[in-house]
Image 1 (cartoon, rainbow, N blue to C red):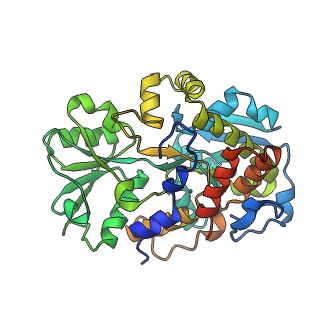
Image 2 (image 1 turned 90 degrees about the vertical axis):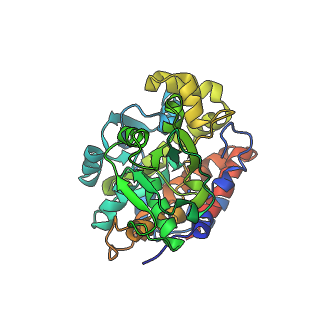
Length: 382
């Protein structure tokens, strides 16, 4: 068993590294890239001189997006601003649910899914060749408490004797339970009791009824339930360090037969991400129109407010090291069999690094791309 400690998560991930993008409004994871690029310092099991990485230009991409969730903001912005067309990327977006989307991805009937981490790693563990090629979200789980909560969460001892609810698909619960286990606590009822609940809203209701002490809930549930007396007692990342949440997932067919089209997609996405970071006044109205949500809620959920810290941070970087560490933490909390094969060849940074390289070559003086390169070098060392 490989435990994931706070130290190793911080080393593997890095919202601390996001602070280099200081011009953005957001507060704060492989294979070699083109050998001519300074972004090519990190490497994975796949080498950049493989033939398929020079092919697949101009292919039609079918990309799954779940519902109207605005956490895929860079693609929404890129679509609205015409970046995909400008990059020569022929993309078709489809609204799909996670189970349906990953089944289609595994069958090569869908080229990409912009949501999900646990799902893709579960498929990989069972021998299905899906590829994690980039990031969507880093972190994202709040630790919520009810109206009567007066405690302070300062370390692992703070959680002893508590009943904590969690939603199985929430990535932060994996990182958090693994962290507590690494700190020497019995997370199966000896020191801490964890209770799975089928939905996040049901977790809120259970907490209000006093059926659990704390709940591990997705970003912004604390914000929208404040008037009911729900409190944000902490964020999972405060204890575990940074961990990957939703990833950009590609099918085996897309990765090997549409590689350069994936690079064009990522290039457009990165341009959308730059607008997201640097121009929230442009981004928020687009996201409000896309999602049907109120602009104030979108601002709080993605950028935070004076009195509310957003738990999730958008970051397209693959965060290869943190994602592979997260795969081991899934084994650590028994959500994957300990004998599951290595995910090393399926968590790749080749698409991302090629896209970032192309933007750096176009705009060599732009500090935004240099800052992303700095993050990339720290997050894709493995």
